[in-house]
Every structure is written in C-alpha cells, then in structure tokens.
Image (cartoon, rainbow, N blue to C red; front, side, top):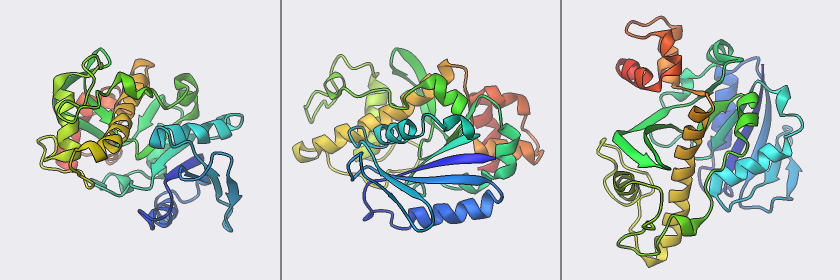
Length: 280
C-alpha cells in the first residue's frame, strides 16, 4: 500500500511536535506501508522547495484559504503521479487538538479493508440539529485535519477548496458578521460564531483558540470561518459525487465485530454515528 502524506503547517512556532508525532503514528499504526512524506508550509512562498535529511519534501503553499488552498498546492505538485498511491492523507499541524481517540483506530488493516472503495475516512462531526448551507440541509461533515481519500475520488472532486470569495460571505459588521445574501442559514451562523468566540455548539466542547470578535479580529474570524465552510463544503461535494464518509470509530467496531454495528452502514453516515456511540 502506498500513501501520499500532505502535512500542512504554517511556520514552525505552533504545534512544534506535530510532524514528529505523525511520524510516530505512521511507524506504530501503518507498519509496512510506503509513505511519501510532504510538508506543505503555507508560511513560505509556493515556489519554495527543499528536502530534509530523512527524504521528506518541504514545499511552500498558498495560504489564501488556509489549509485548503495549501493542500491544492500539494495536489497540483503531484498531479501527474497521484494515481500511484492508494490514499492521500491530508493532515494539519493541529490534528492532535480536540477529540483524538479515533486517530489510533486508523491502522493498516482498516485502510486495507477500505482499499479501492469510494470513501473518505476521517472522524465525522455533527451539529445537534440540521442546518442550511449552500442551498441544502446538512448536519455532519468529515474532519479535515486527519483525512484519507483515495486518488480516484480526488480526481472526480477536483480542488479540495470550494469557497473563496470573502465578499460573498461576510458583511464586515461585528454585530452581524455574515453577509445577508450568504448561502448559510441562521442556525449555522450562530453555531460558527459561538464555536469561535463563545461556548461552542451545545455539545460540551469549546474551541482551543477562542477569541473576542472585534474590528481587529474580524480578518481572522473571516479566514477561520472560510476554512470551516470549506471543510463542510468538502463533505457535501464528496457525498454529491457518491463518495461515502466513513467514521474510523465505527469502522474499527465493524472490523472487531463489535455488537450493534452493521457493515452495511458504510454508505450511511447517520447510521454510523448512531452505531459508534458506545465505542467513542
């Protein structure tokens, strides 16, 4: 099995140990898998390129839309050879933040079991209630900070970035930061503002980098919100093209033949979330 690892960082000040812990994960959970390691540093110009002593390629990345535009830089760099790999592993330097128990459940046996299937493998997050976004009703999305997608699904998808025009989404008004015409419903607007600046989305979890929304922080709010929207939009596009979202906690229970799980839920994230609950 061959994996292209696209590890995204923005400089080296934050999450300094992330690349090292990722290396340890690969050795511990994916032994025998051939991994092409690429570090995309979105704090450096796109044309930057170097090779570390261990053979890891370090390239610059487009930071205009944070991790998504940077990952597209990496995908473009490997466009002609992408088909050689069984999976592309998308990772951010913040991958060990918030809930992480699912990470070690992803091992070589799980990837082999899913090899050749039209899937995206990563932790599935969900709001308490459905929201309106991009003209559809949606509730769940796959977490992009630690995500495996096969190249054939990526070829159909195209760019992992979906949204880019800030003017279409934001008003510049601190009290009502979203543009009135933005294709995002009121519940999702409230969820995002509360997640970034308040008490979260009603699930007992808060974001690790909360801030006060004011004029000085508005650019950061808009950039982070676009990343959130692009993450959710990625899941919508994957589902629309027939790619199933697979939760690793659920999949681990399937492989271990745990009770209350049904392998047929591979194509239904709703059933996966219900069935994974005892094993989180």
